[in-house]
Image 1 (cartoon, rainbow, N blue to C red):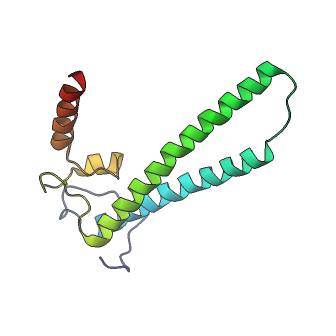
Image 2: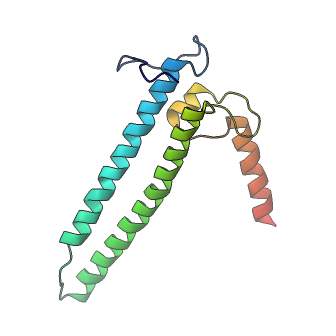
Length: 140
């Protein structure tokens, strides 16, 4: 991938152009990096809030409510930590030239799917098969 690919801020990938050309790749790279930065900023603010927000609350109900809020916040941040790892994996696939292609079939993942979920590794059809198979095994 060229590092000097320039795209306009209003650019949106189109099916009318070659799949995963330099402009599309740069578009998704920027989208992933912005998403990752947003998640990391939120995590930093949570850490700061947890460090600054420690206080002794005498009322048991209020203390329990605050602890529940903290636990929920930590679970949310843990999910986001896992999401950051998936974003990093997608960025690696971009660098390796594998981004946008289904891991199972090797077929291109639709641009609409990638735009909605830039970390997608399966085409819609492969994802549906995976979920059906998972449901069958879960019901056993």
